[in-house]
Amino acid sequence: MASIWKGSISFGLVNIPVQLHSAVRSTDKISFRLLHETDHSTIKYDRICESEGVSVPWGEIVKGYEYEKGKFVVLTEEDFKSAAIESSKAFEIIDFVKAEEIDPRYFETPYYLIPAKGGEKAYGLLREAIRSTGMVGIGKITIRSSQSLAGIKVVDDALVLELMRFPSELVGAGEFSFPSSDGVRPQELQMAEQLIGNLAEAFDPAKYTDDYHDNLMRIIQAKMKGKKLKFDEPEDPASTDVLDLMSRLQASLDQGKRKGAARNGKKEKEAVKEKTTEQPRARARRRKTA
Image (cartoon, rainbow, N blue to C red):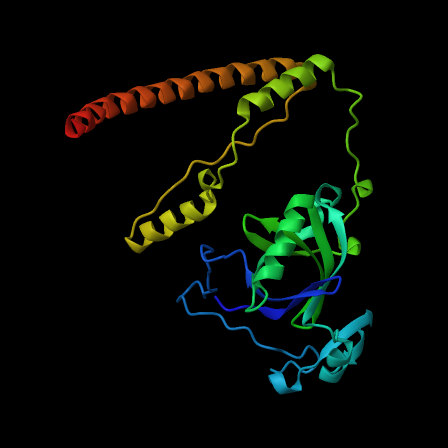
């Protein structure tokens, strides 16, 4: 996988040569073409001038900023070059901040930082220092003439640079109205906490799949064979009535207990099966050793 940026990380007077590689992929996304319904011919987009009604070649197209309805300031390539940040090959860590102090909404896109030749030792030193202190290194990075705020974290043995949003990009919670905690009764809170405890599991990302993607692929494959699949319409869940909240919580807890008992029963059967399978193997190993 090709790097999207080459430069260095600097903290204090220490410089670490690195390359930036994407830490996510979107290979599973399904892409579609727009077609004419009558004959399935592909649809092309054209660059039509609103005032003249004619197609405009790329060579005659410029970029403009609309500062008032119908009024524009045109920017040239020179303008964009002038605005570009010169230090585009360095990521200077300005601050180290405690990870828990950063609002998760700031983080956007992760990238692996790979040490270039000669930077391995300093890379390892920075990684272990960030790991032991629980800090995030905050700075700015310029990729393809666009500057972003970014944070450096540790994930396993990797330093991960995650692009971040600037404060002006976040919508404040004050713009909305949220219910207060005054109406929450202690017994309801206790049952809700118990329900959460019953549903608590170790995080296993492999168990979460994109059902919409899978259903689309099933439909596509069926249509390729001249068949048609039909899925049941999902029911629109009604909001839980305040008076019915306790009974819903209790029913949820009872359901969780049944599922938990079923899970435990399954684990016990698997353990017995494994033990039963292991006993003949153990006897065979002892005979072989004797």
